[in-house]
Length: 98
Image (cartoon, one colour):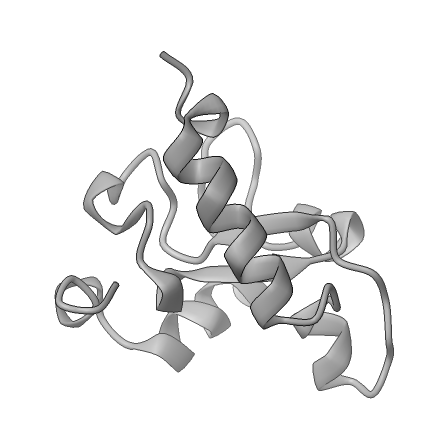
């Protein structure tokens, strides 16, 4: 089953968008207000499945900022994506949070 179609993900996505007031958190860092429609896994889902539903690993983004976080085909993080991993800490420290 596709993770992004599960009830758990759909609920979690809604919670994160509400938490972030439907605003792109990357744009907000630069004083811009842009509607967020994507919830991004800071540590990629394909590599860190155990962090899939951890709040601190999730962030609301506009589609432009989301595309700038990682290379789609390889899931390799870009400089911006790496900056976010540095902000939240190493993956092993996130597992206790929900």
